[in-house]
Length: 609
Ligand code: ARG
Image (cartoon, rainbow, N blue to C red; front, side):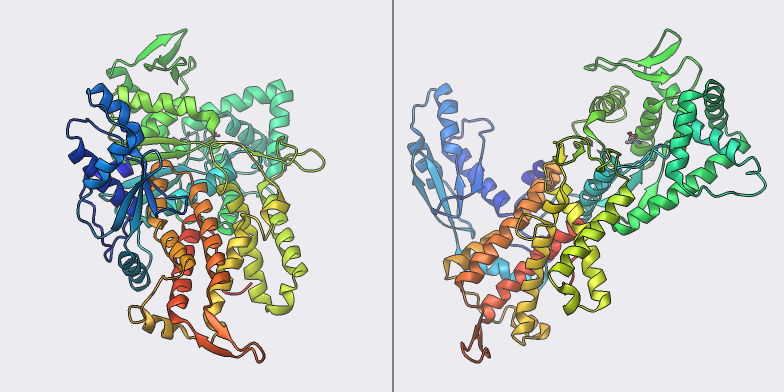
């Protein structure tokens, strides 16, 4: 949808204060028009433009091959080379393209204009990293993290992934200028809560007069579940207390509040460690008061019917109905999600609803979305309602992530272990000798949390992924610590050459970039692909694409660094004899793009590590 929208509007080829140019969008538009003028009779011909992987050209348009059949159906016989040539001849005047040529069976190689690339790098330096144009500002609501208060939060579970992926998506949407509301759809209202309340009342009988504190929430949760599974009488009371809670019985609400407070405290800690900001707690309980009304609305739309005493909702295209009201009159997870959809569409007036929830809930969520559409609350073609799903975290044995004793790993323990490992690694490398305590601690945290996030984000979220502490901290692989080191090294180039930030600032726009060396050219082109990546990510929210891009950028930088002198030193004295300012500017541009990438992924950078 994001790309659709930017396609519809006129593409600017030159960036401005607000937006960087997406070269891929520009070229797609140019070639789309070229195909239209070469073959006016074709309806919706496909345009495929990609960055070149070979030595020929900078981008490539591969549409010709696909058009052979489309043209044949129209009675036009032409081979792909002729078609490619015809398209090439019809590309209109523009500042991007230096020349095009037709190669092989019908590829169109596109060569960018050097002056254009130089201008855009200068714009990047003088105006900063800006998002590509994505159309009108949207109100984006992101349902993320969403732990169940009555469940022990462990790593093999979904909460950590939802938190990390969800936060990156929010940062991405904010980066392009959307208005983002992050909602924590806490599981704070179902039967599991009944267990906790009942156990709480047994353990702290005086809780109404003195507020007790649960010392260890994990143990408390496990104990409550034990009793629920083994004691018939406890189970009955647990069920009764959910009914009481849902009708706002004051004693139950008090117990519930005390339990939720403890849980929220623990969560706050985890979010703080992971730099998750502005996450609004809005659990299932929030929707209780509007559920009866929403049920009524669904009744009126004729979507509900009573079967076996339950009120259900069959949704076209789905084989399992939603249970809206249980036979005992209670509401369900389905009801709360329908209420949440209604509230989000009508009260919050969200343009987009993104649910960052594990893959196993796909059917449930899609059924709810289609029910909302069937009730006429939204049109799924125009309102972006999307389940952003993901797989589970596995251990190196490709089984559920667990401790050596076979127990699930608590999220807190996992973060602690990350810190321990990162600290050990930095000490091994002798960083504790170079950095003062404050710097060392900052580096330790940046590496630990950065690596944990990056390990998750750099895998295709749709699949399960295998986590390994050793791999995550591998400073030569595609990891956060590799990128962080690379960034720090780039940042220190100017410092080591005694060039002050103000000197660089002053050189922007004054010192001419040449981009004559092939490695300079390659690096510059890679830098300008950033907006293409952002646009693509706005469409698919596959954040590993951005990770791969940053890794590739570091690779381009290394090639450039190895081949081109930035700072020339006297071989014997080691004194700086010459600073190639134009190349130093290229280093600065690289650092800027990396910072922007890190910011989107939620990974900290440190000046020293
Ligand atoms: N707490 C839920 C669970 O236990 C996840 C909530 C996802 N969001 C939603 N609107 N259903 O799986």
